[in-house]
Length: 208
Figure (spheres, rainbow, N blue to C red):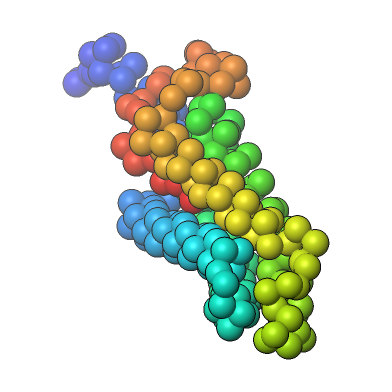
């Protein structure tokens, strides 16, 4: 009767116990592609909003000021909510469907927190301020636009996209360098006797 060597038997048992990613490779690559495209779009949106906010704050042309805030309003209404929520959703799916998880690595946890903060700031703060500025300039005569007092909203519309861009750069760096190692929870999971650490995941969720 044929028998299996003990070492081969142990390897087989360890392989059987090793948790596999939830997503199949084609699904993971599809979600990853969507995440990258949406995140780059969100980055481009905030860069455009920053340029328009600076233009509106510094221009001496009343029509340019009006056009800048109205353009920001269009971008804000159409793109802020779907891009921010889309980046968050696809990032969450990648965490759930790959070995990275939510709480196993510090860099993933930091990215989750900064992305949630960026989504909340974009939807709950940036978008209402854009609507306030657009409403004000649309109701003001051209001759009065340059003296229009927006009560600090014009400065917020420069600071907010700048902060958002800084967060995106941070998230990109975290995705590339993957610093800080495992969390305490991740170390405990890796040390469980019924688990054998597999190879490090080859693909990390990229930055929003």
